[in-house]
Image 1 (tube, helix red, strand yellow):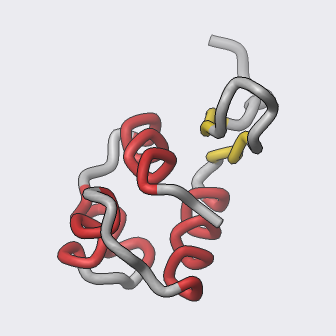
Image 2 (cartoon, rainbow, N blue to C red):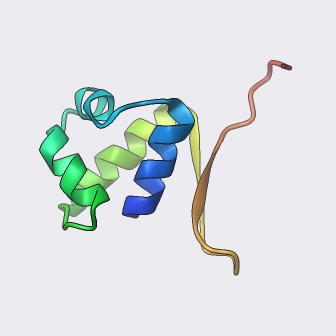
Length: 79
C-alpha cells in the first residue's frame, strides 16, 4: 500500500511532477492529484504507483514507531 504522503515525498525525491508520474505509471494526472489530496484510489492503481516508484529507486519505509516514509535506494556510486 502507498499513502498520499508517501506519493508526494517519493515524487519530490525523484523531482517528478504529477504529470511525470502519470506518464510513467499510465494513470491520469487527475487521479494522482486527487489521491495526493487524500482522495480514494483503487488498490490496483496504488500497487502500480508503488511499483513505478520502486523501479525508479524509491524504498518504502514501513511503520516503525517513527511513521511511514520513503527514501532513495543506496546506489553503488559515491557522490
